Image (tube, rainbow, N blue to C red):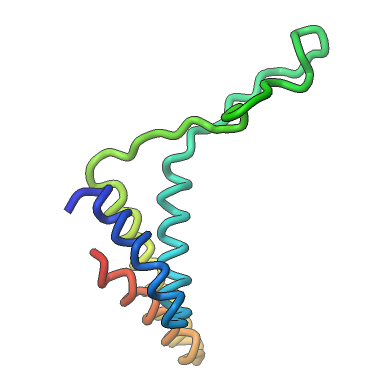
Length: 118
């Protein structure tokens, strides 16, 4: 399965999870999609501000506020989702050892929701 297929599967799974009121799945899918979007973000190059260097307002028009994105290479989306699963499992283990079984169960449910799409 390609990275684009995985992203599309996650995006398509969000609405049914919302309709089913599956809070764990909705939370996990939204988090995974946000992690992918953050990974695609290109760091902003901020030039030194000087009033004599041109217009203060910047570019105007359709698409002027669009930030460039980078394309993730093969396996990066899958690795991000797997990291989300591992993070939830680790946090659940810590919560279990701290006696917070309900919170741990929620994190296990989120991890399972993501694993269904891998």
